[in-house]
Image (cartoon, rainbow, N blue to C red; front, side, top):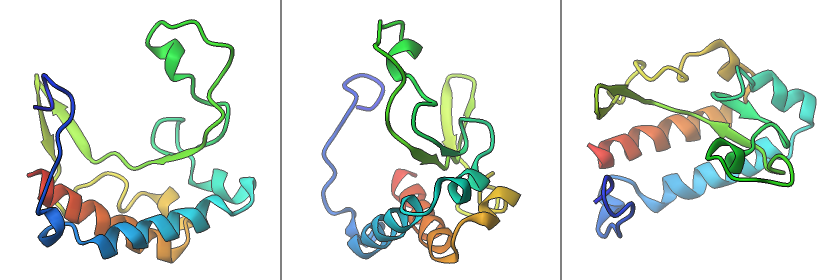
Length: 128
């Protein structure tokens, strides 16, 4: 489904990814993004992993589309998946995930770190 259609509707996922974990991460992410820009930038790595500030991405241009300018969004990218040939695999829900013990993650609030790790582990279990 993901390699042809592009989306699906999952039902009964709550045993692996409880709504509580989703709500915790949303709350902690909102608190993270409410921080001053200079504090958020401490969690920046390379414009791909970690914090990416407003105006640093231009998704349309990435796909060859004409755009008026960069995207006015900010994000925290916590990738945990590596490509092996044409197949994707998830890193084990352990410290193997590259951002979990990265030095830049230490600058993020403890509540955000905990919520992100818990969510990522549960989402990885669901995906696998």
